[in-house]
Every structure is written in structure tokens, then in C-alpha cells.
Amino acid sequence: MERNQKWDGERAPSAFVSNGERRFLPDAMPTREGAPLLPSERNVLTGCPGAGESGKSTIVKQMKIIHQDGYSKEECLEFISVIYGNILQSILAIIRAMITLGIDYGDSSRADDGRLLFNLADSIEEGTMPPELVECIKRLWKDSGVQVCFDRAAEYQLNDSASYYLNELDRITAANYLPTEQDVLRSRVKTTGIIETKFSVKDLNFRMFDVGGQRSERKKWIHCFEGVTCIIFCGALSAYDMVLVEDDEVNRMHESLHLFNSICNHKFFAATSIILFLNKKDLFEQKIKKVHLKICFPDYDGPNTYDDAGNYIKHQFLDLNMRKDVKEIYSHMTCATDTQNVKFVFDAVTDVIIKENLKDCGLF
Image (cartoon, rainbow, N blue to C red):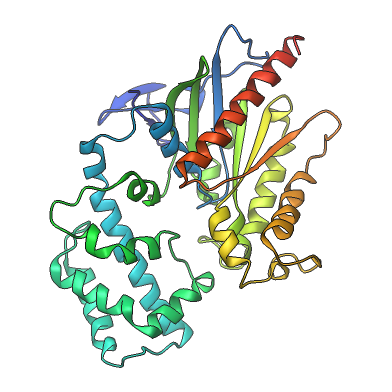
């Protein structure tokens, strides 16, 4: 099994090993210097950009599950503290939002639990879940007012995994808990720098680079992708009614479109295959039933359905391609937490890469 590798953007020798991780600087990133990747080389360099929280890192986790040996028991156990941290962050975000949004508890006695939650959060060891905290979270999560606030999650910052973990609290906090693959896939850690994963598919050797999506992270990687074989851009379909973590005045979908435009039409990627993953289709399917697409695209006058609204969003991205006559963008609707969906889509991506490389060689 290949080890994931990370470059954190700090100055140091071009490549070095620290804490079991290999770290790369931008000048150590491999390039093709404009030459097409020949099939005989069988090496595919794949960049995975996208706005923050679009599912990039989850796609990379799926590559480990599908094309490596998955997560060992020891590796799964290492995610417990991350998962517990995600649970605490989520319930704290909801309770804080109740204050901001002026939402009352269904049961007034839950206000005491709200205060207890903040006190416990300040005193417990990070990444732990003592019984008193577990019971407090359970009582809060059952409250009708808390559920009303959860339903308004687009109005504040909340992890997509919040309801998944909070609904599974009994299992996740049981003695001898071992995270499942789904638990691991839904865990959230902000990506910083550039993280590399290696795997092989259909006789091709992939080197996939996951990068931080927040604005502060982009300056670390945008220039590093020159010469990559393929860009897999992740955009979250469900983000159409949400704002950025780093700027609450900017709609996440608009930011994603802006970033895609800058990458799709960048001189670095003129000869690069670009795959568009319109991710979180499962969340989008639920949200579009309740929140109209006009909140993001005022000019949209089509049916507010999964197919019609999803197709409209897809074309908002594809229409940004300024070189449609010579450059095709391949798009897929994805659910990064669905292993079978990702496997199916990535098989199609691999076929595209093979076809494009044959074209470069004049063999297609």
C-alpha cells in the first residue's frame, strides 16, 4: 500500500521525510514541460482543485479504498478523535446558531444543556467524548428547537456530516468503537498544502494531488499544477444556497464557478484534460425540494427539480470554457461518499485519460 504524502508549503529541501510523511515543495512537483504523456510512460499526474468543502479529500479517500488496500484497523482507529471532534464542532455550531438566529429550545430545560455543552467543550481533552458530554449531546439533538436550527444550516457553517454522526451517536460512542469506511469517508479535516496519493488503475500509475480549497490555500498550489495530465475539479451541487467559510458575503457556488473559470481557461492547462465532478448530488437532491435555485441564479426559470436544476448548474460550468472548439470538459454528477458511484465514475475518467493521451500521440 502506498503512503499518502504531504507538502505543507514550508521552505525546506526539495523533498524530505518528517513524521512518516514525504513532503514536496512546488519546485519538486513533476512536470511534462508541455510534452504529451505517452501511453508507454503510463504515469498520470492528477490535480484535484475545487472550492473549500467540495468533497475533494473524500474523493482521494475513495481512491485509497478502491485502488489501494483500504483503511487498516489501526488507520480507522486513528480517525476516532477526528470524528469525535467533528461531532462536537457540529453540535456547538448548531447551538451557537440558535442564539444568532433567535431560535428557542422546544424544551426550555435544554438551555441548561446548552450551557453545559459549552462548559464541557472548554474542559475536555480534544478528540474525546466522555459520557457526560455524550448524554448532553443526545438530549440536545432530540430537541425540536435544535432540529429547527439544523434545518436552517445554510444560514451558518455546519459540517455536511453533522446529522450522519449525531444520528449514529450511540454506535459511535460505544465501547470498542471501530470507525467504518463510511465513518472515515464522512470525517472532515481541513486540507492544507498538497497531499499526494499513489495508486494504479488499468495499467496506469496515478499520482493524485489533493489541495486545500480555501482561498488562503490556493496560492500554494495553483502554479504547481502546470504539466499535470488531468485536472479533476470538484464543485458541490448542494452549495448553491451557502456562503464561504472565509467570506460570508460570497456564495459558495459563485466562488466555485469563479475558480473553475480561472483553472479551465488558464494557460497552464491548455493541453490538460479537465474532468468536472459536480459533487454532493445526494444532498442536492434533498435540498432542491425545499430551496429554489433562484437563490443562487435569479435568472433560472426552469422547473426546480433535481434533473433540471442540476443540468442548469452543469451548463453554468461548461459554458465558462472559452475553447469549446478544441477543449472538451467531461462532467459527472457524483456522491463522494458513495464508493460504487465513485468507482464507476473514476473508471470513466480513466478511459477519458487513455483516449486523450492516444489523441496526443495521433493514435486516436
